[in-house]
Length: 83
Image (tube, rainbow, N blue to C red):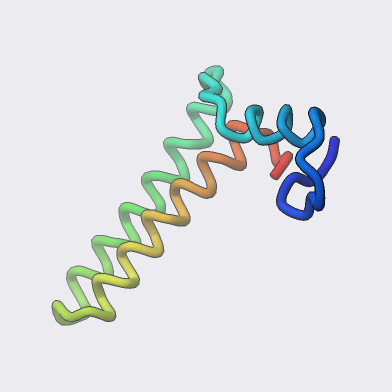
């Protein structure tokens, strides 16, 4: 499996890896349960930030990063740690 993020040529294998990385992968029950745990934990972190940090650009950035963390965690679950 080639690492398309470090590829120096766009070979057929690299193209396949790119397509795989951007393909929707439905979750099974175990993956869904893991995703729910992560989502709940990150949602709680956002609640704590909203309750304790004043509204400002830094607070917005902190919340945005938690949303990004959720998306990255979802990707890790979907691709089973491949990327």
